[in-house]
Length: 258
Image (cartoon, rainbow, N blue to C red; front, side):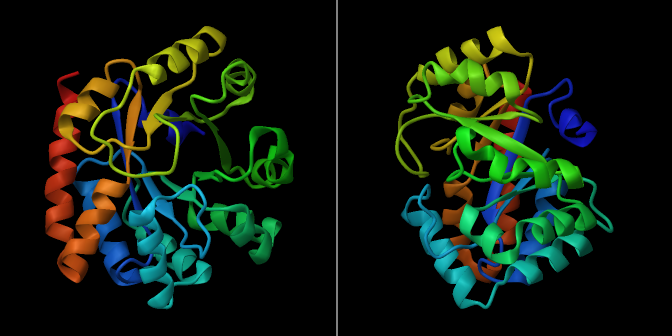
């Protein structure tokens, strides 16, 4: 938990998302190391899945590429273990209930602890069903990140009260993807959270430009960017590391002026 607290300590956190194994597990390993070097405060690693219901086409296609490249959960665990031999930046898994249950929930969380995964984000397990995962997370010291969205409404305070680590605030309705405009509903959500509990709030879904990141960080504690980075990886393939690092620098710098 302390490592997650440090993510938001006296700064606006930048949290990039990539799909593990896209375009290969070796490139993912280098991306994680280079993104950490470029200033990422927490790295969100997606475990590729054949039916990622919360994802838009950009990340769906990344999942397909990663699975086609032979990416498995065990390969991802091994890669994270190697990364953590030299990299201290916290890593969170973003995955779905099916891959965890298929792997074995106890075994999955035990391996998370052993390789140094700090948190898991599971968008298809609603708050009301979190007990399917939380006892295993607690057993192995892995933080289960709660999510809120504009549709959460009166549930926001209830979710905030029980949240740990940080709260993942979904900026808008629908699936992940780059958006031209992000409305201010999320500001109201965050105010509701802060009235209930002093917990960091990170905004995800749709943020792609330094200007958007800076605007969201005016009232959030961090921003999460996925589809915009995954699009760069899709465009450049195995040569994606340099353009991704350049993008990370731009986004991180936009948060320093907030």
